[in-house]
Image (cartoon, rainbow, N blue to C red; front, side, top):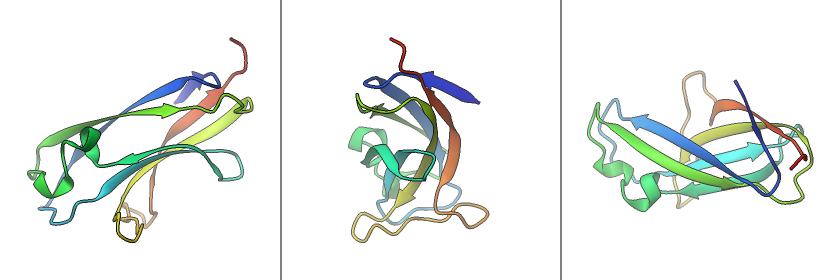
Length: 116
């Protein structure tokens, strides 16, 4: 899937989380937009659902909706960017691993177009 957006815009990202086992820690969510070189050009970090649904309170099997607004820099160059997401421990920044051993999940490609 490819999503188109413009520099200076806000990219809405809606995540849906579901715990498969009890969660004892309070993890933070990161949503990062990466350029072709893997450098972060935009981000949104924090506790899920605008700080209202800490992961330690998640019930097994219950879906959690988590909305983010990713502000795109006004000087963002046109091109393709990768949108990734994951969870991390805020005290040390250690990321949780996803299936396959990566420390993030790849969501989609964002195509930035400079035309207004």
